Image (cartoon, rainbow, N blue to C red; front, side, top):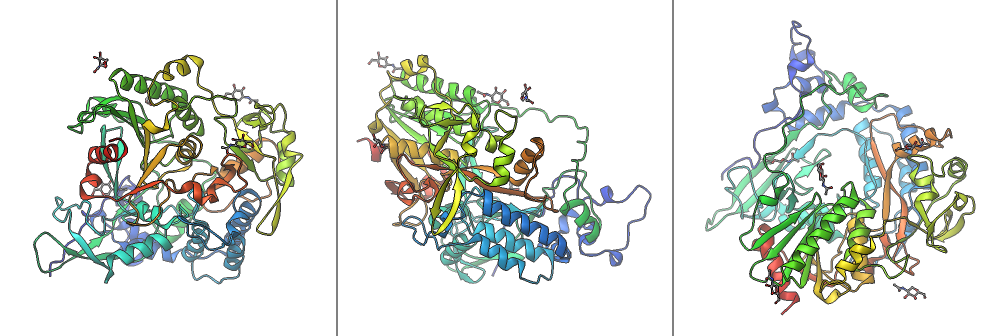
Length: 618
Ligand SMILES: *[C@@H]1O[C@H](CO)[C@@H](O)[C@H](O)[C@H]1NC(C)=O
Ligand SMILES: *[C@@H]1O[C@H](CO)[C@@H](O)[C@H](O)[C@H]1NC(C)=O
Ligand SMILES: *[C@@H]1O[C@H](CO)[C@@H](O)[C@H](O)[C@H]1NC(C)=O
Ligand SMILES: *[C@@H]1O[C@H](CO)[C@@H](O)[C@H](O)[C@H]1NC(C)=O
Ligand SMILES: *[C@@H]1O[C@H](CO)[C@@H](O)[C@H](O)[C@H]1NC(C)=O
């Protein structure tokens, strides 16, 4: 039996845990015996830091009933009155590819309020789990600034840190259990993010994503291997079968610990950890003056030709165009991010890329949105229109509504056209009766009552987010392309790891324009979602608090005492003519075609494009 670490030795980023940053010059280092668990964490040499060091510090943080009470009151109000899917989540039925139990997040918070906790860590763990169990990628609760923990790939080893010595080895067991069911259970039960357990499986596992910095597709470890919360065990034990070897190999993966704390935040004890790390500083510390890093050698990567058979034609910040050499009728548009600003500039890149493909006599288009976790709905709308130009003013809009409460109505009286008041400003919303933005904030004063799963609550009338319309000159040009308004000549590839703006885009192409989508991965033979979360826009608690403050109004929620990023969905969208929020509209998530990962297409995107091109167009 060989015992080896899959991980490289521990890596710490930043200065946080470097002992010299913690002790004033000339002060002798305290002896280890005088240090508590967090003090030990901060004093240890980087190369010897372990899972246990991190766990001991977390576990030592005391439970403060007052802080817990405020936190719970705030998240309870946030999810009762602001989060849009609380009532919808009570839905008893979920058709394939979803798998949901009815879930009452408010009851869960109430039960946490009745629980006695031995430490702060377990309290926050339960609050985070309560939110994760909504299985909504828009909603998250991350109260502790946890280190990112880095592990490796499972089932088959995608890559390792021993010169890929184990790359391709089959994983038979994880922590003593059969590997496949271990991974399925883990992704089904631990991950939130999607209502579809197979999308969660893809999210847990490694894949490749496009990196503009290098101009290539690179490995993304997946959330089983890269954690932002304390993992369930100090090491992960794998039993591998490699190449022709008969005897199984046992490999122990140790966590690589990476600090994500801002530079300048220091601690040397449990007390100072709570004070400097957990409790939100009122003002951000002034940024240390640093020399800006030199720009990467190659930027953008348009000069980098990664694939022998797919020529890179053009690239923006969120999009890349390729032309397949052996199937010259096929062009590929990779959209790896919608989180690109200014979105009009990126839209112009897409327009230029389509023109370039047309000038090369491309007739068929593959659009690859794998791993695109979303971004601006505006960019999504532009890209949809460049393939399917609007015929009417409402074509590019997604119908939407949001929750309304008394405090929101009061604050919204002053919110029209005010700065940074997104969710209280109807100038950003379109009146579906006129197709124009609202001219005042009356929409918040005359809410409608919707009953969902037996609960009544106030919502705005059906409205829509305002999105840009592409110029007539672009419409006139794209009309000449063989794929424009022609679903037969377009295919979409997703892997289910696709966030809201990507979900909305894919929804338009598939449900409204009849384009076929291929989803890759998940479990062979099982249905799978094209996207993880399609149906909402996201805000943080801090955004809401800032908006109330900016309008001189009183928020019904206290600030939470802990440094945190509590995200939630505030605006839900609907498929055309549907009464079910798109987020819960399982039928519209299901991809028409499902293809499995092969070893080849997992590591070589060009191979995947060629296969899907051949399946699509004979
Ligand atoms: C995980 O480790 C690899 C090197 O083995 C590194 O390239 C990668 O950036 C790490 N991931 C994170 C999230 O730190
Ligand atoms: C891409 O990002 C770079 C750097 O931020 C910026 O200078 C450039 O204008 C962006 N390109 C587009 C098309 O938005
Ligand atoms: C595109 O097709 C036209 C008409 O068949 C031909 O004249 C032209 O050379 C082709 N262009 C390229 C780049 O292959
Ligand atoms: C809102 O912000 C814009 C710039 O972002 C500024 O020009 C404008 O004056 C601001 N309006 C108000 C009312 O603060
Ligand atoms: C929505 O309903 C309208 C009016 O009944 C109809 O004209 C339109 O085709 C429908 N759209 C979709 C996408 O079903």
